[in-house]
Length: 461
Ligand code: ADQ
Image (tube, rainbow, N blue to C red; front, side, top):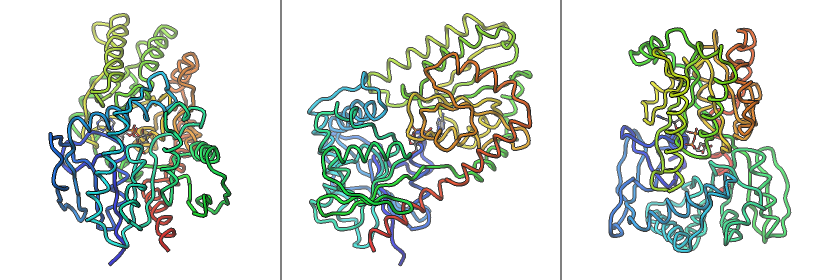
């Protein structure tokens, strides 16, 4: 029997259920599809007592082991430490950072619970792949229970510079916990460099580089740290997007534009995505270029996320106000300048929307990677492609050099980029698109999963 891959993430998304959108689910499934693997994590249900064990289901060859978590503990672990402390800090937004001891304790407890419940499901030659910042202590907790399997960790979000990380009480433990994995993977070389400087802050280290991951020696143990930029299933998105254009939803959308160009943004409603700044930039654009008002409509799709974290409530209110203000100032009887929608769409429909976008506006203030930028490129019609405007603070900017790159804080530069994108001649659009597609194919989702798993296999050997 081939080696089994066991993925562990905070949230397990069962297929066909209306799952919250997130890039992680796509990545995990692509890793599990071929190995008859196991996906372990929280199933989305909360209760008042600790459940006896995980609920098991198998679908399309993948086994899903899902835990129910205690409500109060989950709130502290997820809304508290994970998304109130780690998320803002890792995105360099220390003004939103808040630390509470009881939340950190809940984070530790849930990691302990994950380890205890996973233990009986493990086979000796399983390769364990842990995902994201919710589960940094998991390798330590599993080792304490005697687990000897190879364990890798992939961080989907940025890894901050040590001077930012030092804001976190107990940051040394977090670094030590990361070095408890056999492999630690990051989205970009910048994140890896921050990690290396973080470990040299607390350890005397020696390191050497191999082709795909550097080897770091710590207290007589070897760990590997590498860059594994996550990608998308390029051909599947291209096919989905093309098919979606035959659907009623997309046809109606095109008709409603009455010849105007469409600028599109798709982001979880999250302050790291730079939506408040983006709305202000668009308002500035309409003010600066009155003659362009007749030629553009901006569609922003932003499903609500983490609604129980206070800073997410604030940003939602700010965006409603901003959209209302822009529409109040500039709307005409037959034109709404911003169409702002807080809902999820089926994947295929979303790819159809991206395809008909003449401009893709992706301007996070920080982002581990940003899959929407890659989906936008993959969804375009290569004969008549749209233009991607991309924040240079997204991980994707390391690869997508042919996008119009902007600093999202530089309103004037983003305004100019929108104007440039609207006017860009077809040959330049084609050339940029072809170059972006090459970048996408070099780091597709399949390449990402295969490379990480190959490293895990090498560790086991
Ligand atoms: P996210 O912060 O969730 O992911 P992103 O990479 O853009 O950000 O992925 C979002 C995914 O959700 C995309 O696949 C997108 O199509 C989908 N989505 C967004 N809005 C949707 C809607 N309204 N309806 C349906 N689907 C929607 C985290 C990190 C990123 C990193 C990914 C993967 O923050 O930096 O790229 O993980 O590692």
